[in-house]
Every structure is written in C-alpha cells, then in structure tokens.
Amino acid sequence: MDLLFVPVVACLQGWIQFNSDCYLLVKEVTKNWTDAEVDCLDRNSELLNILTSAEDQFIFFEMLNKSMVYEAFIGLRESGDSLRSFTPKSNKANVGFTNWQGGSPGIASGHTSCGVKMGNGSGQWALRDCALSKPYICKRKGMSIMNSFLALLSGLKRTENCFKKILF
Image 1: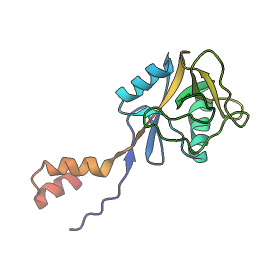
Image 2: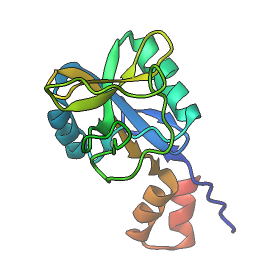
Image 3: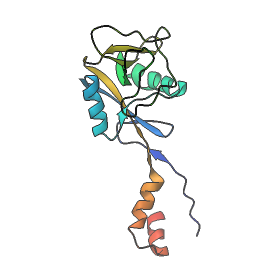
Image 4: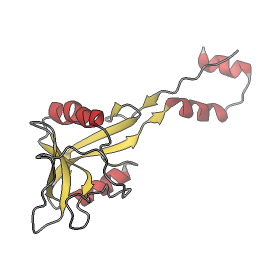
C-alpha cells in the first residue's frame, strides 16, 4: 500500500493563515512595541515583518480593515539616525519591501520610532512613538500537518494493521 502525503499547513486557533505563515492580531490588550515583541516571542513568533505586496494587502484587508483596528505595531524599529535604516529587531535583516505613507518615513523628534501598519485609508505604514500602547501583529511559520502526523506515527508500532486502523 503506497501512502501519498501532501503537506498541509495549519495555524493555531485564533491565528489566520496566508501562504505558509500564520498571523495573530492582538488587539484586546495593547502594548508598547518592546512588550509586544516579547509577547510575540512568548507565542513562538515575532512581530510582523512584511516581505511582499501580497502579504501587505492580506494584512490590511483580512486583519486590520475587517477588525476595524486603526493601526498596529509591526516589526520595524528605528535603527540609528537614518530614515532608511529600519530593521526587524528580531532578526536585524534589512527591509526589502516597504509601503510607507508619503513614500518614506519621517522620524518624530524626542522619541524612538517604531513602524505601524495602518488599518484604514490606503493601509500604508507609518511611524509612531515606540512607548505608545497599541495593538500588534505576530507572525510565525505554519505547522505542517504532515510532519505532525509522521511524528505521531513514529511513536506507533509500524504494522500494516496499525496503519489501517489509523487511516481507515
């Protein structure tokens, strides 16, 4: 008997799937950017790093706009004194895709700036004081159901009858 395993990605309850990633909009309890980052890490995820236009549109339409959230922290934080040196703090990668309101970010003086994804209007990005308390978005890789199933099977006695009982 040949078994065909097709990998399927699944997300934890409350998370929303897009491609192979899972997203959680945390809006019930708002946090400053640093506490939001810690909360995402505690959830085995990180603050959202938007990589493509398609992902950016998904976040806007499926999460923020439908949830009526005005803006939410994402994984961008001021790095140095350059307007262009924003990095996702969790992995220090350079930002490739951007969608800044007005074409480029403007740093407000007197505080450290962090990125937010706007939930209204055009859904672009803006900068806010990192100390403000806001909703935020966590992102994590989806779980492969195939891997979970194979892990379960590895603990079972691999007889034909065992597979028949599980599969049929």
